Length: 198
Image (tube, rainbow, N blue to C red; front, side, top):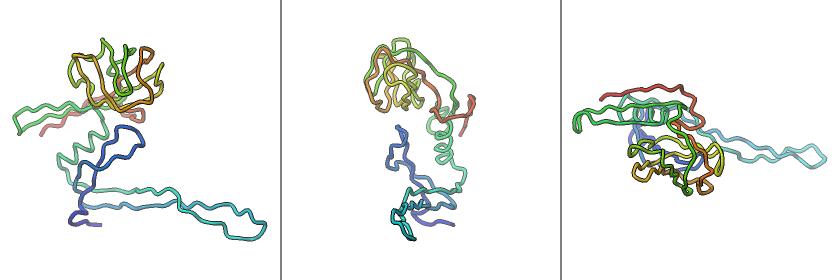
C-alpha cells in the first residue's frame, strides 16, 4: 500500500522500562507498508450439559508487518540505535560532517559493587571516569538488592561517580552487584563497532 499525506509517517517512542508504553516522540517517513491488526479469539468452555456454541471473546491484539523506508540519515539512525544500543557521536566539521560509532552486543563495559544509590541511581567510586561515558548502556544487577533487574542508563556523572537510570523496584545499596552492558538482556549481537560517516 502506498501512503500519502500524514499517513506517510510512523511515530516512534523509546521505552526506558521493558513493557511500559510511551508516547511517540519522533516521526519517520515510509514508502509502503503491510501492517495488519490480528485479534486473538478467546472461546470459553461451555458448562451446560448440552450441545451448545461456546461464547467468543476478543483477546490480545497484535500489529505486525513490514514498512519500507528510503535510506535517510534520520530513519537509519533510529534503526541502528534500536538494534545496537550504545552510540558515540562526534562532530567532525561544525554542523556539516558527523561520525557515529555504534558498539553493540553483550560485551561488559564495567562491573562492580555499588557503594550506595537510590531507585534511580547507582554510586560507585571506581565507576565513571568520563561524563556521559555509559549513556545508552544498560545496568544489570546480578546479586544483592534488585538482583535480576535491568535498566537503561540515561546519565553518567564523573564528578559524583553516579549513573542514573529508569527506576528499579528498590533503592540500590552496598549489596547491589552490577554489570554495565552495551545491550539489554535480549540483545544477542556479538561485540563489534560500526561507524557511520555523513
